[in-house]
Image (cartoon, rainbow, N blue to C red; front, side, top):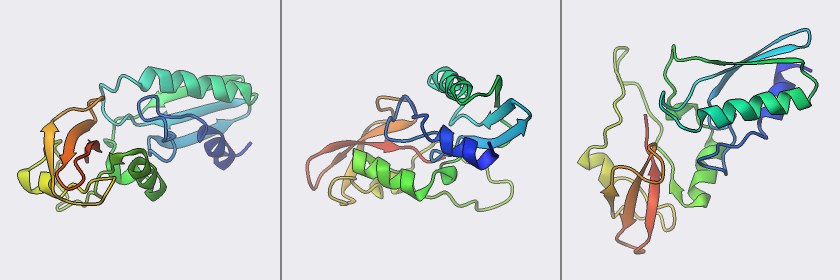
Length: 167
């Protein structure tokens, strides 16, 4: 099996907190190393305290052992922090179809720029509703069903929705 084939297999591992996304399109799988009948998968969690990480690791090990690998190592890599820019466009569309406003692409403004999980009033007013696309939205809570999401309300279609925070 090649590294690309392992990545295809890993697309079967869903994010336990957002089950419409798999870990490859979410961008947390950073690398696959193969050696004989051993595979190492490097992952970068969306944030260091992600409660879904243990379940994701267990799913990776179980799935790759089912594929015949005798030794499966999941290594957490924190050297470069995960960013929503690592999400695929397909993942963003899946979020929107699921009723979660996807994060806007992040663009580094300077080499020493450090992204903060902060939503300014300007950013908050620009979060489009995933149901109707209107930008007349407001934040109702800094946290949603998970720490990586915030709760919003659309004034146009009167629907509450979650926003996947950009970082």
